[in-house]
Image 1 (cartoon, rainbow, N blue to C red):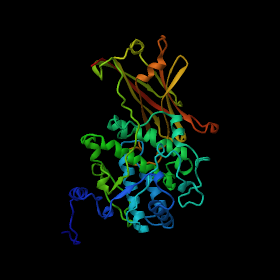
Image 2: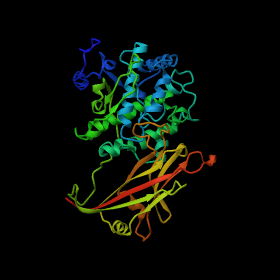
Image 3: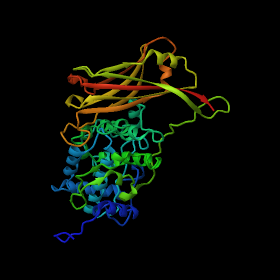
Image 4: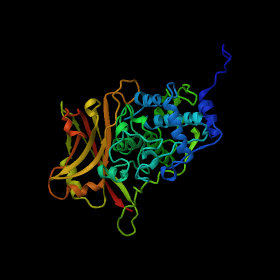
Length: 444
């Protein structure tokens, strides 16, 4: 017992004990009933969780202490992890803490944040768009109340997270910097399309849609997690700690080890159902009786382009040898392209869309498009290191582009201005990296 009469608790042991009970770690997360996060389309303006969210936000907006609404926005703007592998656990913890604050302030003890899935519920729920709704925010993009978000998002880019096949870094991101697919292609588009406060990191958490959106991002992670092996997470990533969160009574909740927040149940909540993702791993169609392709061996081509001063555009050309093999390909050749593009994280990168395209003989296909959403605040944590990077990939679908003529094929990236009339200087390209793997196989 210390001099002040307090018993020193082994935090790791306490966390493990709490997880076994299905309760959240630490006093701020103790509860008697598990929270169930429900989809927006199953709720109405009078649903308990919607009423609690509106009441809680109103109460927090009247406060000026640690449990104020502005404090949550400031916490996200200054400390939120973006463009790196801590994006998912950091936002999971902030959202889980906000739930406890609202439950404590409103008396809705089992309050669970609703989630809004823009693919499943294509439009914003009426209880956030109506001008008399408690969750209404006037600073949103024009026409957002009736926008079909699913159609708008797919019109810009066909790239999403593949919940059945993405590896850890592809899905979640890299350290010290590098967005994963779930952040760059799923998360960022919603911020841009909602617009207003959501468009900028400095103000995004002030819009209640921010919390509905991040509940769904967390649900996507929970879905991917449920399909992974226990050892999918790197040891150095699970050992990281995150801090600075505000508890239900306004207290600092201390350090949280990433490896202790992988299961939603250990934090006291579940989802009514997991993400109903489309099937990406459709069976290959081969010769009669064949069911799969067995790799026999292959070759990897690596390409890199450095950014030029004052230019946002970067490009690499695919090797002639690789093109010859692809143009002569039959259904035994397996094609896998993976790359990343990096830009200097400066003011000029705000309000841009990173566009990645493959071109050949005047024809073009998109390999990725993602609006930028980035920190410009100095800080010690990952993601504030001066570079903003985005992954991309392609496969055998590019055979439709390159054709059978002897024409060069180029991958081109640009940071296109979403407000071209502003005539700003271009963003600064840093590097474009690409690897192309061609694998010979046989049907079996």
